[in-house]
Length: 211
Image 1 (tube, rainbow, N blue to C red):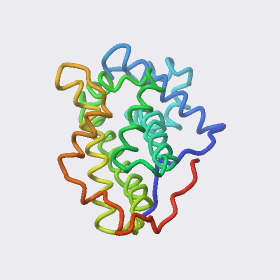
Image 2 (tube, rainbow, N blue to C red):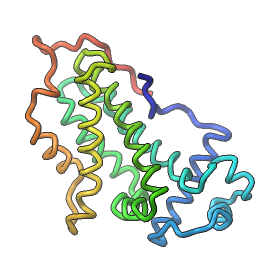
Image 3 (spheres, rainbow, N blue to C red):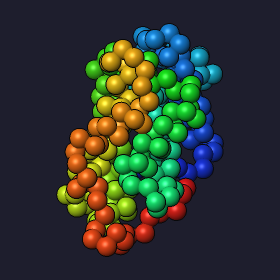
């Protein structure tokens, strides 16, 4: 099971796609809607329609580079977390830090836009599926188990779902709360067994260095 959502230096086409993606999301957030033509999105991103289509086969795909970059940063922060933290604590900290550093990515408003159409929801669900795989790898590194094991896959799914609920919670509850705190509450409901390290407290798989 290969792990997506890794941070790598961006240049050329990748950097241009990321910048265009951020511009599109910025427009969605400003107008609180995704109801734009490709021509309008391309013009806003400073691209020709032809180039826009080369980058994004469908206009809904334009959200992926920026959202993937945010999730990749969370995964990278998890891998760099101090060993004194638990996986649950590290994830809550990484989520809160990511949201604080990327204040322009207003998830409360973005999630509302992402639920506007079936096409956007489908892209968002694929992003969450990729996040499950990446978080399964991180959980495996923390726990010293195979990323293909049932436990790692379950941990990845739980962590991705808890993260999604933490992002959605301020929007649906009608009041602001720190998503990191909400995520911790969600994970606490599960009990500690899923995220406990093996007996002896030593990880048998080395965590990857920060990227």
